[in-house]
Amino acid sequence: MSNHHYIACDLGAESGRAMLGTLADDHLTIEEIHRFPNGAIAICDSLRWDVLRLFEELKVGLRKVAARGISVSSVSCDSWGVDYVLLHGNEPMLTAPFQYRDSRTDDGLARAFAVAPADEIFAETGIQFIFINTLYQLHADLLQRPAILSAAERFLNIGDYFNFLLSGVPKAEESLASTTQLYNPQQRTWAKKLIEKFGFSARIFPEVVPSGTKLGPLLPALAAETELRDLQVVASCSHDTGAAVAAVPAAGKNWAYLSSGTWSLLGIESSTPIITVKSRQYNFTNEVGFGGSIRFLKNIIGLWVVQECRRAWAKTGQEYNYEQLTAMAESAPPLKALLNLGDDRFAKPDNMPQKIADYCRETHQPAPTTPGEFVRCVLESLALLYRQTLDQIEEVTERKLTTLHIVGGGSKNQLLNQLSANATGRVVVAGPVECTAIGNVLIQAIAMGHLPSLAALRQVVRNSFPTVRYEPQEKMPWEEAYKRFREMQTMR
Image 1 (cartoon, rainbow, N blue to C red):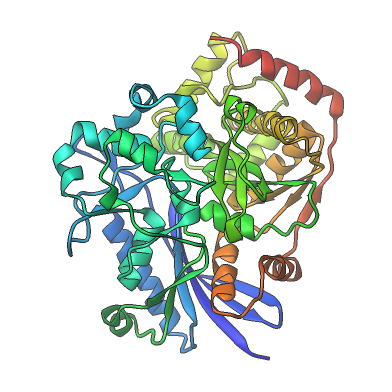
Image 2 (image 1 turned 135 degrees about the vertical axis):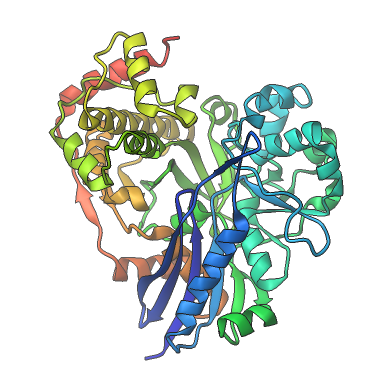
């Protein structure tokens, strides 16, 4: 039995990890080697990412793997979408990259629609309209700091940027490129009409390569520094959700996936883009997945609201971990107050409990008073939002969805899993937790010739990782809650 080892560098908005994957006899084991915090830095009235510190942390992870004395086949980095680094010559960056919640794109949609109508943008890209998209960030660069954008020779989204730092090869992997709202998923290339119309320089857009492309060996200086030899750098799925969806342990057709974490990314796998009047009306997106598949999904607010509540309480000396908060929520009264999580106030940081309480008072609902009540309110509202999104997918695609696979860090939240089953009326299958790293590793295995296909990849996942099944319960209270939830969305 031969073992193959791979390193997944998985970067999230709250933390990053270097993960070691070992494939042996159609089974995968995954081990966290090095974890480090991440988060936006508030500086000069802006929110930025400290990507150089993150790279140094990744190198720590590589050195820890090398200390194991094992032969590693490859390494690949994945990250969240939309954010990017601007490059010029040998400079590691022109400026510290902006974080997607920075206020410079608050009016980005209105500014963009003055250049190109929404219909045209959606027809070209099939991407949902959300102010954080790369399109609106680059447009802000063009309007607010044209000298910086003019000096740029290339832009790379975050996961691709780290693969570039490892390999010296600046390519755009298509799952990540497709998040920008500047990529055409039908033509499988950059949306040249939009790029020209907005006045962006075509030279900054790198070559797009398919998921699972070998970029080349680890740079010699890094190989010497980390003591990792004969290591290939692979562009697996550079978008974390693309990697996670590839590793969903599903079979058949009547399933949807939910990548649950800071964001909730809920959708289905499609063979072709679904760019229709109805999909635009419901603000769905068409992102590229492994093998050229389409991730037809909606990017909706996720556990970010709970994360922000936890940060706010910590500032007042109330320190809770997520397990404690979930236990308190489980004991709180059910369906007491519901939130329209699409309200813009919940997308921004700062004193989230106060925002929730204000919203409840404005909508004539009892405001939560304890941490458990706040968290339960958020989780129940999320579950109802999942139902609404699944119903919309069924309407757009005429596909009956009976099972929801929840993967990612949020799949550990047993309360949210059961609430999701109750609210949606569908079976929930939770796990694996580390689906992003698993997908990253196993796509590397395909690239290196150690696995033959996506079907084989998913069979390895089913062989290797347990899942937990949740059946729907308490139908009537949730039907009434869903009616209240829908009515709330019409309130101003």
